[in-house]
Each structure stands twice: as C-alpha cells, then as structure tokens.
Image 1 (cartoon, rainbow, N blue to C red):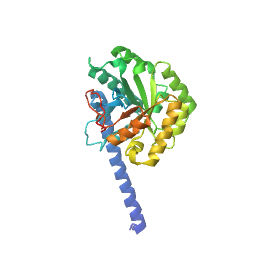
Image 2: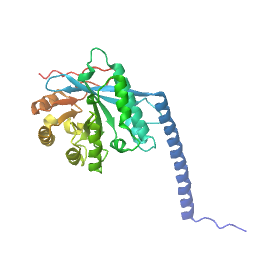
Image 3: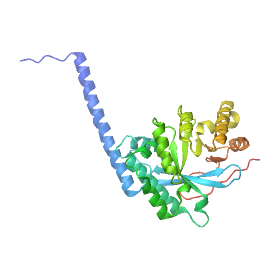
Image 4: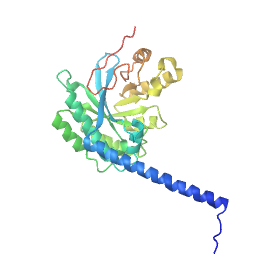
Length: 286
C-alpha cells in the first residue's frame, strides 16, 4: 500500500517542529551546564569580590564601600549581567543571595587592617528585595556573622535595586522596620532608572538614595538631569536622606554635584572597584 506523500505545508510544519525540538534540547543542555557552573561557583567560593569606595564630596573622606561580586570569565556566561540574569531564573536565588552576602562580609573584614577604622566605615551589600520578604530568610544569620567578625549592624547598608519592583509596599515597609530596629540601614539603588522610583522613596523612606548613572553622566551639561536631580535633592534634604551619586567619571560632574550640595558619590573618578580595600579620593577640580 502506497503512503500518501506529505504536502509542502505539512513538510514545512514537520521541519519547524523538529527544529523546535532541537533548539529546546540545546537550550535545556545549556541550562543544565550553567546550573552546574553556578553550583561549582558556590561550592568553591569562586566569585571575585571587589570593593568600590563611596566618597564624601564635601570633605574628600571615604564614607564606605560597596561590595561587588563578579564571576570569573566563563564560556557559559557572556557577561556579568548574563550571569545574574540566569541566577534569577533558577531555584537558587535565595541561597545564592545568602552566599554572596556572607562572602562579601567575610572578605570585607579580612581586608580591613589598622589603617581602616571599621566603626567609621559603612559596607553596602546588594540584596534582592524579594529575599527580605522570603519567609526562609532569617535576619539573625547575618547578625550572628557580624558579631563573629566584629562589625556593628549600624555599619551595614542593605542596598535594594529599584529595578526589582516592589508591589506590596506596606508589607515591605513593615519588614524594613524590623531590620532597622536591629541597626541596619537601607539604600535604594538605581533611582531614576524606572517609573517606580518616587513611590519607592515615599513608602520605604531609605536612609540613602543612590542616583542611577544615567542621571549623573554629563550632568554638568544636561539641563533635564540637573532639574530632576535638584528635585530629588530637595526631597532628600526635607526627609533627612543622604544622596549617593553613582557613575562619576569626570571632574566636571563632581564640581557640579558638590556645588549642588550632594554629599556622597561613587565612580571611577573617585576610585575603581578593587579586590583590596583602598580609600577613594577627590581628583583635582582646578
């Protein structure tokens, strides 16, 4: 019995389906390899931790450091953003966040020496807002580690990215009040990068507002950026909040922000991320 030949449309549909199966298998295989790479990174503590200084623009003194964890170059991740994007799609987000936080604090303390008075420096730790709301998270774990290494909670700032949308503001405000009662302070990162900024500031009342680099770059030449930063600065003064301008790369930006009254800043012009703790400094503004 002769089989009925496929029509051209059926042949194309079959080809498309086989191509879909092949691509899916390739994607699944890549996910598996990346997932194993992530496990190895956590098991071997093979993230690199860098510390970038945050400088007081008015005095030139180093106020603190932001801890930045970066994976080593890998064939499975094209960039740091690609790596963290993948982590966010796995079932190990909470575990990875705890790993990064503990690693940052451990390496920060190991880098401190007699030159640095730890009671006068603040360490900024990046944390995903959803982790703080996770019922599995026990804030006492971090507090115990701080006690062991001799750092006070008052010197630790949880830095929450504004790009991670907060939906239940009342619940989040309640959770943050709990952490503040233990001495921790809160910074909102990337302010100015998304539509949620103003609502986030009003409800969460952070101790620090970190202005996104998109607002800061060439601010001395951008009237719209100047107007927006000026408004945020006015709000910060009235709410007793400190501003940290990120992405400083030019002396002209520093001069403008200093004249405006912005207290803190962070960027290559003040100090690059370094595996050792190195004080930042103001460049010549002549």
